[in-house]
Amino acid sequence: MKKTFTIVFFVLLLAACNSPQGSSSTENNDPAEVEPTEEQQDELVENEDETDSSDLDESVSDEQNASDEQNTQSTEENKSQSSASQNDQKSSDNKGKAETQEDKHQEIIDLSYDIMKAQDKQDYDFLQSILSSGTKLDKKNNKLKFENVTYPHEQKFLTEKDIGELEFRYTHETDNDSVIVGFGAINYETESSFTIDFEYIRENGNWKMNDMDLNK
Image (cartoon, rainbow, N blue to C red; front, side, top):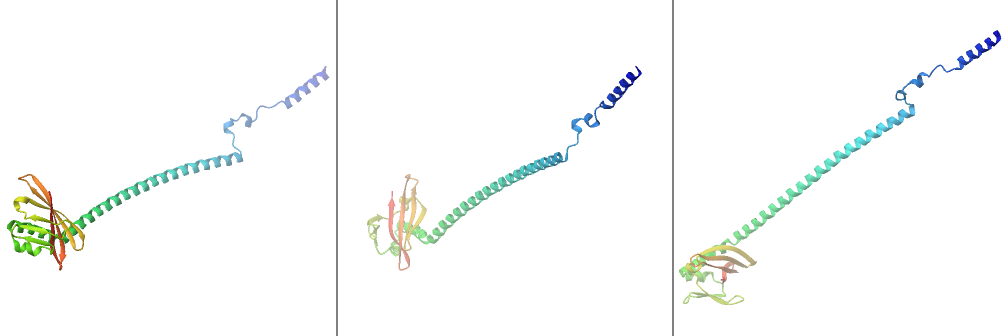
């Protein structure tokens, strides 16, 4: 009996020694608190670097896009300003050319006004002095005969009553020795108007009237 008890005690003692003493501290720890391995740490750092690099690239891209938009807007504004400046310059140049041409022909513009006055006052001496060699003065009938033109014709003297108000319109230089001066004749009493084109040519260095054409 005693031997049997001893054997049973020995078996229980052996079983107690081989029995687990409980979970290890490592097994009882929360999985979230487990320290990552060195390989996991390296992978985490790489992921963080990639995220930072991506954010930086997006920031740089946004700044580049904003800069491109500003450059595009600035270029469009410069083009608009340049175009407006060129248009203003062209307008100024055209105006300058018109004024220069008018100044160049101011002598015969003034001469045209004097011719109209001379016809009204029947100033034959003045009229004779400004006629070209192909133009004749008919004092008896107060007419001018234009023969050195494409269509020869006669024209009676124009009086102030016939003309009304005389308005300068333009000058047109057909060549260096021929200029046409255009006027508008407006008669408010009769409510009528017509145009008068004087043609001047150079003879012996002086401007001479070669034609006076009415378009009624």
